[in-house]
Amino acid sequence: MRNRKEEILTVALHLFARDGYEAVSVSQIAGELDMTKGALYRHYKSKRDIFDCIVERMEQGDSEQAAEYDMPEDDKESMPDQYKTVSLEEFVEYSKSMFAYWTEDDFASSFRKMLTIEQFRSEEMQGLYQQYLSSGPAAYVKDLFESMEIAHAEENAVRFYATMYFYYSVYDGADDKEKVKKEFASAIGSMAQEWIKQPKLTQIRKS
Image (cartoon, one colour):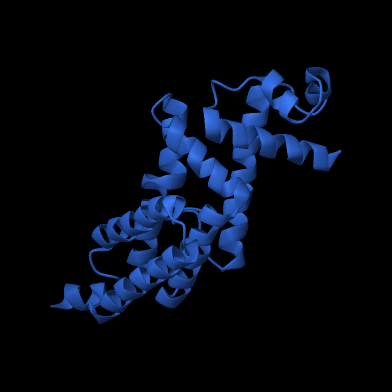
């Protein structure tokens, strides 16, 4: 039963990522799975129910990725102590894992592509796009940088995430995807070396 529910989510997400959420019907999802609408409704109440479960699955996936690398799973106000324990080296390794997650994991990659398509079609989709792929990650990185006492935290967070997002786009269109992964790792490694050499916030405040 659970495997069938997962299969429905995955097939629906693939269709949403290809054609857009509004354009896909329950009948189309059921047809792709070679099942009747009635059989599909035994697993999910509606297309909206499927979508909500996709978002819930992504929230869970994000938390699992953070937990695996001992990174904060929530905002700084909710868990300030966890932010204080993250090192720059740990952040770099986590960033590499997140790049692989958002490009190579079928579910996460399809979710990213769906939001990229849908962000201009509704306020809700724009909000999810911001939460997962734009202002949300940039704010998370800024808070981490502030906790690591990296100077100009917001500016460096924007620079970091702009680099990551650029390589998402390059990866999607590349024939040699492993080369893009290495280029991304090299780029954030170079930025990390710059941040290590910068004066810490405490040093700036004292001067």
